[in-house]
Length: 425
Image (cartoon, rainbow, N blue to C red; front, side, top):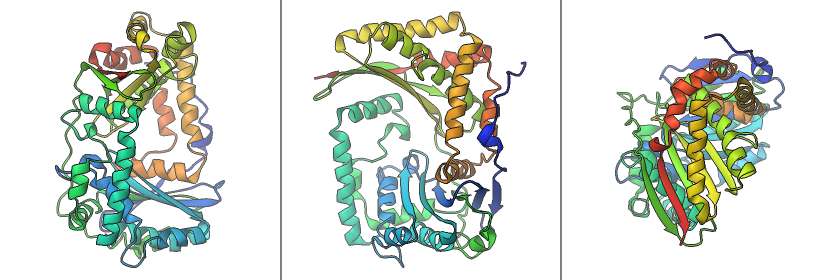
């Protein structure tokens, strides 16, 4: 296949390749110096998302993220945040289906202390019973708030219908029964099995040029982690269940047509790049096919979005069209018409080039901060996919209109989707 005209690599090409350091116990640490970044981001990643929970543990991964910030063997509740703020920094964390990560952003001179604080907090959480009971109420309230939002209820129902035999079909927040049954000992067991070498990584990005990263890590709690006897078994592959479903919800202000398709898993980076192009071509911006047809021309919808969710067991393309209940049939018909039109008459090269620039520029914008870069390379390192920062831009060049049409467009056929029509009750 002839190569398409190359995009200027700009920001991605101005960075050196990430530097990988493997500690004696197998933990991998990746670092990247950004000359223009005045701060340093430390980002600890772990393969401890909700998909790794066993029956009865639903919600423990997210609950553990909360409990980590309640202190460690050396840090009282709230002390970590106070000390990071006193260093001029900030911190945050997030739990997903596949992984969880904790990050701090600090001035370069504060890195040694911030690294010690972060690793102590994440690797040695205290899990005090009194704090455990109090924080469980916080998590249960979070769950209640989610269940009180009709749009969130509809989205979770779509996932449950699309992924009935897979952890991706369960809420990351868990279930009320499982959360109430959780104990500090059970959470400690989950933590001890997940936060281990070969299941975690650390990323350091920003103003790192004067930092003695190797010596800092050699004497850190990360180097002292005991490896597990065996690697974590691979989780089940995703097999999406197509179907047509309906749900009536009180307080839902407009009808929502939700559709989910299965796309290639995260480890197929070239296919992921192609899927990003295709979903952008279909629904990114006013000139995209679905937005232009359904919102701009026919005015059938208030909004229509198609998001690519890149996941380890199989990615998901999730469509949401918001419209009046009486327009739902026409909306669904036009989605099928647009798909059929592209199948019969592939889009011109200019349309693909527009999508390529949208995806590429979105990626470039993500390289402007130390936090974004640390998140990117930390996640890549965690899953064994560390690559030069320019690589995703180069993967976009490998997709032509013909290749998208033959390899990926069939995966978005309407009959392959799980469809949920959410209606106001």
